[in-house]
Length: 83
Image (cartoon, rainbow, N blue to C red; front, side, top):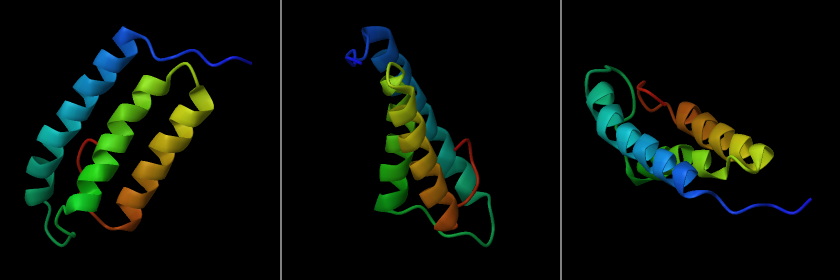
């Protein structure tokens, strides 16, 4: 199967989702008591989860990237939020 490159629409939507995660998550975490504060790794995981949406033409890769980012985020005990 030949993989198709991401469409402009998919890239735009993934960038919008990434921006949303980067804006809303820090505000949600600062209100959450007893969790680890966001560090550089947390932001990398947020970006990875958001940009995984651009891989819609490769659903298994998209799912694996999003699942990996969210799993690592939860295991590191960062606060809640939209992720």
